Image (cartoon, rainbow over all chains, first blue to last red; front, side, top):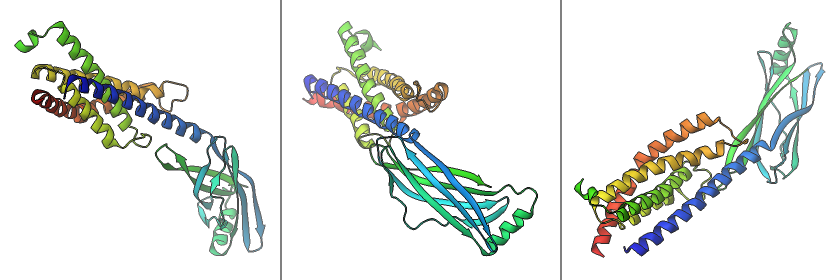
Amino acid sequence: MTPRIAWALLIALGLLNALWHAQAQWNYQRLIQISRALELRVEESTLEEAPQSLQVRFTLILTNASDQTIPVEGVSCLLWAGEEFLGPCQLPTEIAPNVSAEGEWRLLVVTEVRGHYWENYQQARSAQSFQGVLVRGSVQVRLPTGRGLLETTRRFHTLIR
Amino acid sequence: MNLTMRMTSHDIGLLVGVALWVGIIAGLAMATQALPLFAPVPALVLVGSVFLAGLGMGSLFKNLTQVLLAVIFTVIVSVLVMTLALVYPEMGPEALLGVEAALAGAFRKAILSGFFFVLPLTLIGALLGRLFSRHS
């Protein structure tokens, strides 16, 4: 290898590596910005008691303030009344597959608590420490990394009285 | 050691300049490799670029002492560059970690990358580069 070729190689490698590193840093900063632009909250939550069942109703709202459409992979949640387990949430069969850029994603979740879960609820309700039904869950979203998508989870919990 | 003493100011300038430049290349490549989810190219390309830089560096020196000195200097520079490159994003208001935590983590990564990647890659590359240079 002649010195001229060696110098050309070193200059090219220097420029390429500077470019690649700048791109990686930009992708990283963008992921942080998008991540911070997502906000998950629970609204319109109600409990409706019937003679043999309990209806737990709430709306999950994921707000996306970024200019990037974010795919939603899935939702899961569980219901609790104190120490008593009231079962998993009954999620709608059709869930919007993504949150549009500068948009909002809403999911109305209505769960009927019946059978032995209803008995668990009655048992918890009779206790003095009963405060309400606790909903704990998560929404899985995929954030762009520049090379692909990174699956992350947004957790939520709320106490419905 | 005698060979070192015979180096002219031109040789020393060349050694420092080349080692500094290759150190920057290696430091940036290793810092990019430390962000695997965000790097625009695969890790193998980044590792390969460090090896190629070593190859280019080796072909610019006349003797083995210069090559070895350049490799050592390259490793030191690459550790500093990689540490700075990884800490830099944690300096602004968007920082996720504190600067101290980021600095400690980045320095540890840089030391490990320096000894396990930059040192062997540039050393082997430079020795091969010197061989090619001799045969051409």
